[in-house]
Image (cartoon, rainbow, N blue to C red; front, side, top):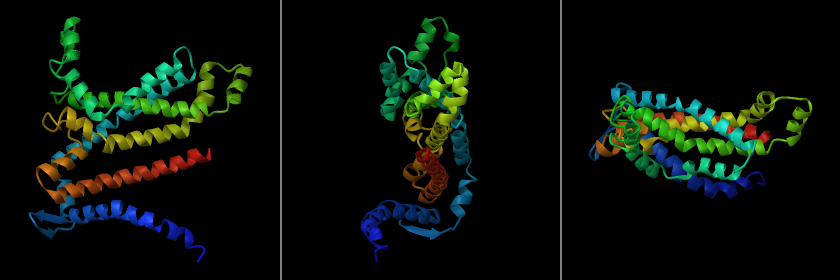
Length: 285
């Protein structure tokens, strides 16, 4: 009986979690196996999944999410460089740290609206380029299928890199200072200290940050797309989250929307489990 006591204590919390999370997931999975028409539904098995992967719009959404993953190495590089520079201190250290982190705490809809005005055809950026005599570089950054997705990627990088900077700073501040003192006594240069001490000490945190950013690019870009481009022009900025939103709420196709949700959830859960494994490794260190 003593072995069961801990489980009895947490049983109410587990029940609440099951009702709030697992039951809706089970319902979404059940819906993904149905063809819903009004108040009636019929079982179609994996039919929604087959039609989903035959839908060119959904395949385009997957490609766009995959393309957004190119932002991850850029985010890592910017965050790592700034994190190391801020760690090494200098005048205005606290001020610069605050400025770097500020974009991360701004609401995504606010960021999307502001950058929407900046990057539109007659927006601030193009006005500045024309005023500087660089009108040839002006473009319809959000209205052109050639530039729209890359523009959103740039906004995401600006918004998210502050998280990585603070993450790396927190890890570096917990590193034993004796390591750096020993390296200086041995005559190690800045580059040697960076390669042999700083980067190895950040290894697990870098893995953690990369996984978080991959999850962000796969399942947290809806707000950027919705506010800035609404998936357009055409389907050039369509992503899986926005596809699910359109299928469920605009076209009322509950089965395909549920199937797409399950596919996205499965990928995200795999990445979350990977992140949890990294978190355990960080705690052990």
